Image (tube, rainbow, N blue to C red; front, side, top):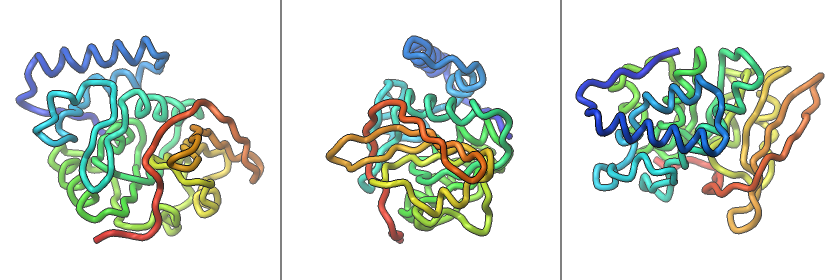
Length: 222
């Protein structure tokens, strides 16, 4: 696990992060580890400089290539749900995007394996995290529906885009006792945030709330 230390971040940026964390608390985020990580992670480094002044608003923002950086509340919520299972060493993230959720996970778990189908985003996020001295993340340019079979099983899986149905490959790659947090549903229909817990080879499913994510797409883009 890593922590983020970035030189040259002014007090204004720190104060805006603290205000964001207060909003997360008001919305029900209670895990102190998640709140501490959200407070110390510079979200403005994960968006285009032209909209960096909006980085600490509790909203999703465009990152190019038809993708978005998730709303901070959703990042915190999904991260908190993963931690509810207890200590987990190995997590798979489907949809690296900007790398913001990735860097949160890297401060929570021993090893993060992250897949991104859009090549430019994958390369940009990998460079960004290495510049921030994050070295416990393993990157793959690939199809998220297929997971990362040769690195399975995973103690936890987090999916940051919405498939219409739960990908079977991801279920197979979830370790016994593991937990998957995933939004499921059509882009123009109802999407639901689900928690899947594998017990004795069977999935226990919990539906938490309605959400809105970009669709999970197959294939790769170079």
